[in-house]
Image 1: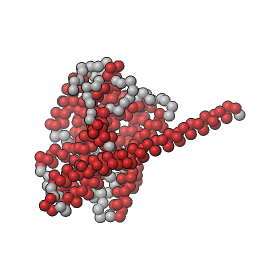
Image 2: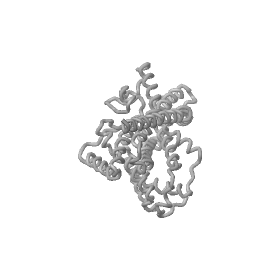
Image 3: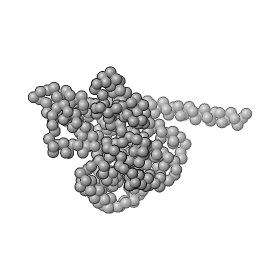
Image 4: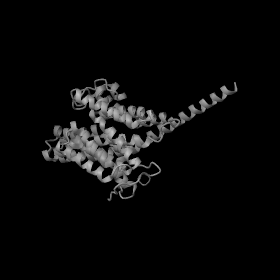
Length: 371
């Protein structure tokens, strides 16, 4: 893989907006990292202690969420920055974000809610949950039935703010002002509680939101051809070393997110120039990454319980390996059988509804002119 120093904007950016395969590969790796990290608690509860070296590595898989946040910022700006002002853009933006989040999420979250009602002694690992948060992803104290849904609440906040930023015509300035507000809150008030506080103040001003902004600015650099590739890689390395020195602690994860944002730009340019290729298997896993992310949490818990009953065959390796494998198989199946068809049908029908609405508006406007 050969990174050129500084391509011109014309050479660096394709005329169309194709799927960026390196981002899909990143999605795949991030989803599997999160799955691996979540196998540890259930394995240690129902199977046995995970050796510390293995635990130390796999437990950092939560950093996959940081990649997803950086990626969200990148994709929102990459797809929408040139569409602002076009007729129907706001409706399309809201429809695409809402269907992307809720359609795959709701069946799993609702199924868990029904299960918890039928088996109240099982519960959500002792975490209080509510139907309001489960159905809306807007926290009101109790959490969603799905443990990983906390990240979706942050995603929805970012999508709403991004719409405002883009509509303003000055998205980068608005993003910078958001960073300033987060910095002021962080420097003048006590830190938000860990694991993530889902109060309105935290969802709006938690430092992890910086990762969305890093993704936005990475997309801007990629699209404009600005930024020296070598310098960006050096900055990525410095941030990564800093994150490692801080033991990749969740409190300092925005530093890891910044490293990802710096590294994404030259990697994407390498793909656009044809010097970087992504295997098809990673593309499939990347496409199914959201489904994997959603289905894995209850699956690894159930599987660890089953492995725990295997007696002499039970081991932490079986629990972790089987948990990751089952999450991949189930996630890919959910993606192919439900997620893709559901999104296709929903967006087709919403598009037809929009067309019918605009046709009705035009007919009414024509009638008014002739009356």
